[in-house]
Image (cartoon, rainbow, N blue to C red; front, side):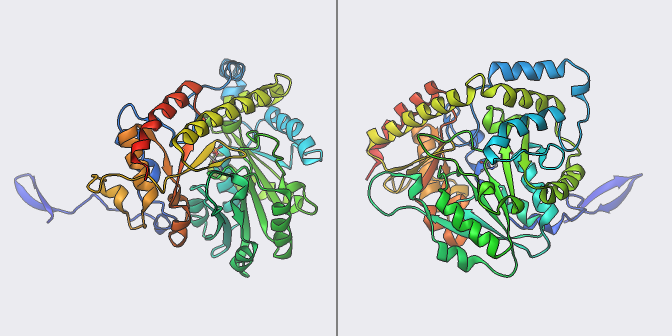
Length: 441
Ligand SMILES: Cc1ncc(COP(=O)(O)O)c(C=O)c1O
């Protein structure tokens, strides 16, 4: 019913003005408008003292010496202004020095390195630069949720290939989540343009083996695919696992863009500094895209990230950080062991997948509508995560959210717990989680 308003004593009918301008249909794709899992399991919806192991950001600050570099950058003039769209030269040089030995080549700071506003914007820019309408992009499930809208906004069509968890009893290594290569081959069509690899993997923690990457590389070569290798957790590989960069396999440099993140490396996820490394043929078109999207990334924090990379090795920072994360992981998994629950031991990244299939709540437990169902088949994991957050006071994220509808059941038994939190918080979370025992079937 249109509202009426009185102007100069005359009643006129007013049109509903709340939706005057139709928004772009691209927002209807890629779950961009759906209430996402982050907003359901957001602090605002959970008890005030709930310990947040849901979201993957740290509850500690970047190292002091990196923060000081940021302060210094804010206190000088040039570093408060626009940088070159490729990124500040100091940061590109630091990236070159840090990564050249790992890639086994002398990276070119002018054409083979691009600084972006977080890994996320870098990935978005690659999609802008390379996808044509209808191009298919293969992603392994569970996938980092940003891939989906970033692909569909740019006309791409996501094609999902699940990683399969092991079926045996007891806990297992993330290496036991495997690719069915026949399934991967069946997913390929003449429209396949690109494949996204994420190692170490969020949320599984899997570090892809050389052999797995070689098989992916052979497929990429055979089908002329662009490979986006998301390696934002490359500094968080535990135990004696080897982080292999697919770009270093024979022939792969020319078709691979590797993605990195200062946010993950220096506990600075809000800084939004990331980078892409690849051949000029991939970096240059992507530079054209990023220049239109953000023009350049924020300057002072690029400068601080440069100092981080310059000094990380000499300060022994990355080794120390790996040790700290290993301790954090072990605190959490020891807590799950004590409960007798089954989980995936991550080889890298900072997530543990807990098998919540045996968590039982009272039949009449009042789950909100958003958890019960949102069109998607929201099964065990979301309810278990909600129940654990409300009754135990520790939040986590249902892994089913990182699958397409057809494959939701593969992840329905897992909840993702992030251990990028300080030791005290993790110990407290573990203590609370012991109360879950009475709800285990
Ligand atoms: C697999 C993966 N890729 C990319 C990103 C985005 O990284 P950034 O914060 O640098 O944009 C994340 C962040 O959680 C991630 O988990």
